[in-house]
Image (cartoon, rainbow, N blue to C red; front, side, top):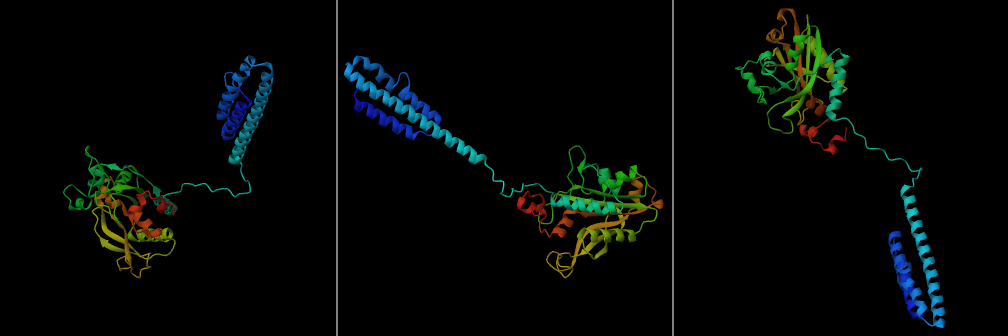
Length: 340
């Protein structure tokens, strides 16, 4: 062993120490050079075999190298620790002068907004909110509503029949029967809920949609009451005066029956592609409750009068928010939903 060997060892150790990036690697290099069984230790133990003069010179150089390496290891260790601490501080540091980030919050679906608005308007006018089952019997969905099995009107509804003999309701009208069976008039109710029809999906049709049923029964109820309630509802829902009209129509469970149309809210009745240049939009069906419906509910027709209507909630929301495709409501597209 010579001073030249020690110098080479020193340069090699210094070079490896400079390249170290973490404490674990530094500890490995420390053990490599200063461990009990490593290079420098072996050099120091081999000195006893050398002549005294040479042993003193090499021993002095070896101890100087040992001390040098200890200092270098300590410097590098301190450098790595300071770097770690600085990185941690930078990561955890908060600039309290920077404005906070607004958290992303969920919000109501446009159909929920429209539904709550409808419910609020009718509640103010004295109506109760009633719900019913989505899965119905043929009795409540058809027979009790004056649509017997052989009635051609059953072809109007493309019904989802279930294996147990039940079906997915095609309208919310069955709740009329259920409510009148258990409650005596006078009655003022609205029935919000999903309905299901086996039909193709396109920009204006879905196999599942939301309907708002309305029913009012008392001793002296007429079409005039229907017009007053509907007119006030339109004014409050669209937040402006809206012209509307009743046209003769046919529904098995009402007599007489009406198609309710409103002046197109898109073009203000001037005529556009939405209203097919007519200036009017069909939004609901309505009419005076058929005597057979009262009988099926256990009420005596000569004692009571009433009217019922059915709105499509999606239709109302599309007109209010100027939406051109009903499929957007259930698309799950956040670009659409976050607009409301």
